[in-house]
Length: 538
Image 1 (cartoon, one colour):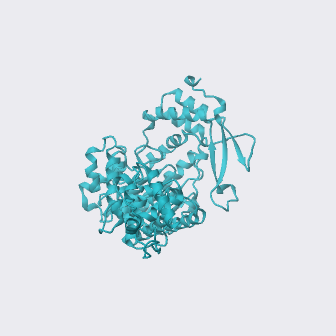
Image 2 (tube, helix red, strand yellow):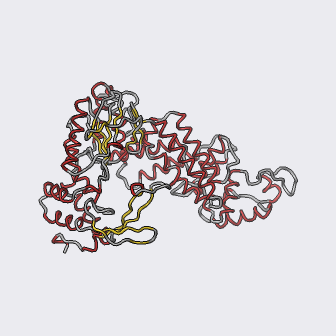
Image 3 (cartoon, one colour):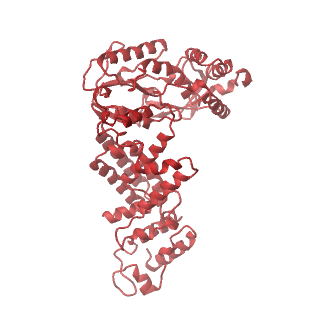
């Protein structure tokens, strides 16, 4: 059947589960539809997409970064950022942001098929897409009840693996029309997120007219209230007869844009506020969670809130902004280790070393190195390459705030990695060694970090073995041992003096406990901890 461009009808029914965007969601626009499609369809689409990506059909305009290998939000964000900091005629301070209303759901399948025919002579491809995206039905699950199937009148099939690729085909001619073929791009797109960067008022009106006319011909609708213009020129711009809003800040690709650039202070304050909220929630709910569970939740639910733009932040942030993020990390790791009653610079370094978590400055620098690797592996048509080339040839065209001028793509350690970038496992091993080296730095002979060695660290997370002890009470005891707080404010039952770890040897002939902290035989470490626990009923 498939070789004739016909797919099974049963593949064309999806099951939609509305997920509220906020706790107070009432109206339908406050829900995000999650669609599940048949497994066999997904397998077929995966294979078919690989085939489509191998064809000239997939050669989209390089100003589109959405859903494309070799492109990313970060490469586009660097371009967007640096165009604020070029000089003279190359600078782009005025920005227009266009929001397409329900872009996926408004795709006209007949128009899409016509665009497919223009890009490909293959009737098979067109027939397969026609079969997969016409006569589509959906059911909706509400409070456990499933509705009767209803026919979809328009739009791409929700949940389809092919939908992002097809949307790029649908919108590609708009990008071509917006492109000025000059060294400085006039537009950047990530899927349906459109940013226009005109060099003057006349070009701004021209670009807006192109977008308006394209929307009319392609049955799209601009959400004027969610669009916006930001810039020092204070132009009066209209779309569809309505004046374009002039917000003080507009979030593009997750970053708040204001007059003159990205508002890093606002981004840091917002991300730290949200991460503090998540931390407080976990502190209430996770009182009995073992340390390793807490650590994994910190990495996935808290740290991720500020790491999205870390490669850019590693250069753009001020020391005070780094300190705000570091403070949240310190509180989080104190919670992970159950040691919130201990503070001080030495404890903070020990918290990070035990948890396998670098300082914020070190972590962001690591992610900047990884960004250099990402850029090196990006598509040759990525417009970031053109901007890098221009600034490297003429360094004076960019001000000191330029990320490219500050080598965001070419960190000094990336230059060490670059000759070996294709070697299997080299990058992972290099970054792991770098991380462990940073976590193992000691400042004095009494620094407990010196006891954390290669055999005591997990080979992936670099966290200490104390967090991996299965019994959560013994795990917390092991952490206290590592911190020398296990006998905090206790008196030795033998000599009646304030207890120190040396008393284990002097009074009880217990030696070599630190040597047991390794992954070779955790059971031996657990037995020793149980014995120590029994001595003081800790």
